[in-house]
Length: 232
Image (cartoon, rainbow, N blue to C red):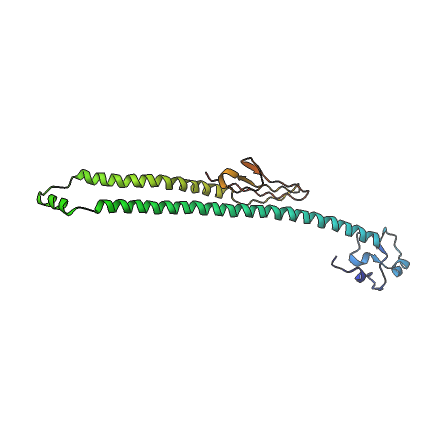
């Protein structure tokens, strides 16, 4: 309580303890507070309530309110912590996917480099033979060279593209689903998190199911948060 009980006095400032409360809707604040002297001079007949009883009712209402709010905050914070864990796991998963792509491109570069080294080496005597005999370079050799490069590129590109398509799918899901939408309604509190265990590897509860939901109910305004994460 903001005010201290010993600082509550009647509107006439008699500096006496408050005994009764005047239950008159027309009165404001300390005009309702009646001390023993006010009671002696009370002329109008109005419904009265014991100050002690009023104080007990107010304290009980506030106790219930405090308990409800604390329960709400505990559940809300717990769910947000689970969400935070899922996001950390998602971050780790994305980092792993990026590392995989980087390793693939490094291997790709290495293959192209090694292939190039093997095809630009030559024998002096073989080339001298070609020069003396004025043998023209066969155009089909060039085609074979480019075909080999394309085979390497296609093979590595398939690996890279498969992973990149997963990120493309994730991007779409992110725009549509990885978006916090909070709705407040005078109903039960429901905090749901849906995560695909097999795809993002971010379990929120111990479960053998591939899809699962964490849900807590409390008779307070509804707050609904959903996350959908997709990794193929």
